[in-house]
Structure formats: structure tokens, C-alpha cells
Image 1 (tube, rainbow, N blue to C red):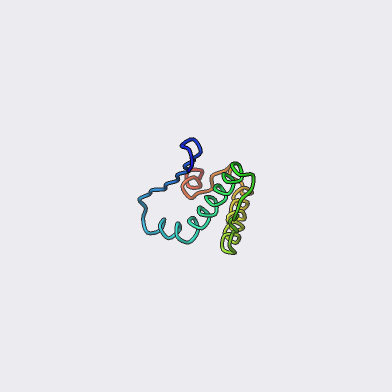
Image 2: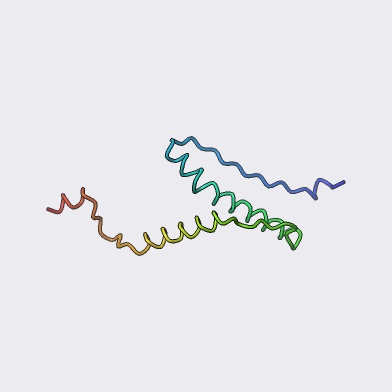
Length: 95
């Protein structure tokens, strides 16, 4: 039997009220990435406590693909020139 001081509880909760578009993004893109992040965090916590992970979680092909898409998307927006607002609203004001 474990003593109370030997017990660690990790708790994670996520609550949201969203529309159908955000719900679809959650199901198709965010949930798999979120689950991979949580699994990585749990593996890291287990490694900190036991110095190794008994059954490390492997990412599936879908998570690898989504991570690469997210990285490519972030790189695209990082290279865009965001110093000048070229939205139609600002373009009309300059005329």
C-alpha cells in the first residue's frame, strides 16, 4: 500500500463552448495535436519520477503530418511582411 506522500495526481481539463467551425477544427486538427502534447507531458512526468518511461507513447502518422503542416503554416506567416497593413480598409484610407 502506498503512503499518501507517495501519490501524485496529474489532472488536465479542457472546457469550451464553440461553434460548428471551431468544433470541426478541434476534431480534425487540434484534438490529435493536443492529445500528443498531453501524452508527451505524461511521459515526461513519468520520466522525472521513475527515470524512464515504461510504455512511451508513439505519435501516429496523422500527428506527424499535422505537426509539419502547422510548422509550414507558422513559417509562412513568419516570413510575410507584416509591417504594412494591406487590408482593403487601409488601402482605401491611403487613397
